Length: 244
Ligand SMILES: NC(=O)c1ccc[n+]([C@@H]2O[C@H](COP(=O)([O-])OP(=O)(O)OC[C@H]3O[C@@H](n4cnc5c(N)ncnc54)[C@H](OP(=O)(O)O)[C@@H]3O)[C@@H](O)[C@H]2O)c1
Image (tube, rainbow, N blue to C red; front, side):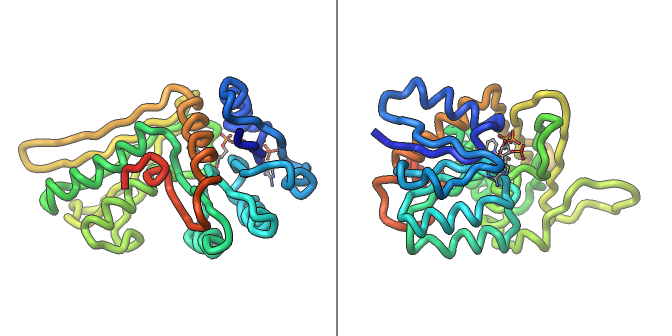
């Protein structure tokens, strides 16, 4: 039985996690922490903290997990590069799964995106389009950033030098190096991501569409059960799924 504490428990993901965990005999939610609650008062009751709160909360949560030797699953997105580096500093003390997307389908998309970029090579132009509900606070999505990072890594580019967020005005011809990232917001879209490989005479598009938050919640609960058995380190969902 994996004992789980959820931070961000009253949010959209927090509520979905609680609902999904209630159907899993191998998981038990022993703590629910939201804005104004004190994680310190419940942390000893759990084996693992599952964080879907706010990027501004994550660092304190990681530090507390390290202090109490508790594993951690981080689903919260919107961290800066510096914020991610600060989280990574704790990897020698506790096992952490950090993933911008816990769905099995999206992690398969990550894997396929790497393969497609390797196979198609530099003659194909790369663009990413993501769509989310109108209440999402960060843009582009963490998943779109991960996809862009994978593409840049395959092309041996520094992402910050080649990423292009939207286009407006007389922007000139597209360069071969750039990786376009476009965020669409509206309604109740749970999360769509498309990677476009646009060549001359053909185009390949890889698309994933999430229709329910349960896919993220079930993935995060799977990660929680996996991470409690791991040595200290920084892992992602590809590690959990054995896709690396
Ligand atoms: N990795 C994935 O697969 C995945 C999937 C979906 C979403 N996400 C990410 O998960 C995060 C949450 O998404 P959501 O849609 O559930 O957002 P949400 O509905 O806004 O829920 C976040 C909850 O966390 C609470 N919170 C804020 N600061 C806190 C703190 N310091 N301590 C404890 N709780 C705090 C919020 O309270 P207030 O509203 O009062 O501030 C809110 O109840 C976002 O970063 C989102 O991008 C990741």
